[in-house]
Amino acid sequence: MNIALPKMKITVPNIGRAQARGFLSTARVELLAGLTVALALVPEAVAFAFVAGVHPLVGLYAAFMVGLVTAVMGGRAGMISGATGALAVVMVSLVATHGVEYLFATVVLMGILQVIAGVSRLGKFIRMVPYPVMLGFVNGLAVVIFLAQLEQFHVDGHWIAGTDLGLMLGLVALTMALIYGMSRLTTAVPAPLVGILVVSLIVVVFGLDVRTVGDLATISGGLPSFHLPVVPFNFETLSIILPYAIILAAIGLIESLLTLNLVAELTETKGGASRECIAQGTANVLTGFFGGMGGCAMIGQSMINVTSGGRTRWSSGSAAIFLLCFILFASSLIEQVPLAALVGVMFMVVIGTFAWSSFRILHKIPRTDAFVLILVSAVTVYSDLAVAVVVGVLVSALVFAWKSSQRISVMTATPDAHHKVYRLMGPLFFGSIESFNEAFDPKGDPTDVVIDFAESRVIDHSALQAIDTLAERYTKNGKTLHLRHLSEDCKLLLKNARGMVEISLDEDPHYGVAVDYDVVAETN
Image (tube, rainbow, N blue to C red; front, side):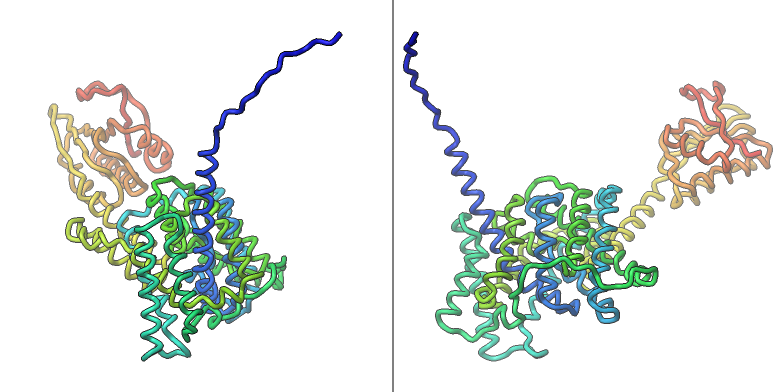
């Protein structure tokens, strides 16, 4: 039996076209931003390879592999990683003394240490870096980037001069003007890419005799291949590479995490510090096994990416892929790019990176913070980033400890002839111990003395020792010291120190203090 079914007209709603156009527009911007970054990575990777004393391809392979892995796994989308000068200067003595194979082994161990740091969630401690240190890091790094570009004005150890210098400066200025103008006209195409392409075309069309990427080194090569470091696998090798690996791991993570915070602030997004540690470590383990010199986040190239519109992993990942394509297929073209154009791009990065507002606020912020800002900037320029950050954090911590030590104060009350209450205000720690000790009179006080910690905290071992010493002094004078209103964390701290301070819980209604119980510290 045939049954005639009614004809049905099915219409598909026309949805998704706007989303598709938006995706294609975003993809175009991200890919162009990646191309711009890749062009800027080439001279940097080559230069840092020369600094470390290795072949240029070692630096380029590191930029490709570290950039690709961190783009996929990193804790911050859009951040650029690759071979950096901060790491290269540490590698010089290792390569000169033991050779490049020991460098590869060191990079692998460096990566393992960084993965351990990430798994242990040590990346969260980057939040302990004060804002003045962050500003000093940014300013110092901007100066370092600027000084690094001056090397392009050297030929055979001498400054270029005359017509060559004038032409170089003119092309640099033209690149900067193009970037400035294009960034205000449109965001459809990254302004730095326009600057590089226009200046490159001018040089090629008019046959200008200027230095190009090819004058640094040839970047032609093949795919990186797996390579076990040719070193003895024994304790002697470990003793050689471990100190370098620790330093490199620390520098790499500090620069990466500070760059992550900076990019997150610029893009008003959040990043995962521990995830970034794991990504950096994984990238360095791989690059060590594939003949790369290792790397970390690059603030200059990250700034280029952000200002070019790169916000996702597409831009950072495509930068690494474009860099590999340059090595495999387009080396002859990339080697024709004038260095002046890339210098102009980096000069614009310097201008965008430097915190110019710090000049306006120097006289408005506390003098100690202004000192830390200037100190970190100077140490970054004259030493290295890791030392600068450590120095800045230490100085800030000492300043904070000194200021906190001035906050402790004591008020007293004598309810009757046999009792005295000391009301302690402010943190009790190593910096405030002297003021704490001076506030008490074990010889002149009555038989029962209470220290009220309602507005204080016991912070560290020095505070425990001070309480123990004070209790002992009262005991020698035939008196008892009571600790009242301790917070839960303070009670736990004291309980964990039972070998040093005798602790017991005791109901104590004698002093008119509104608590359920107190902690009594008596020294036998």
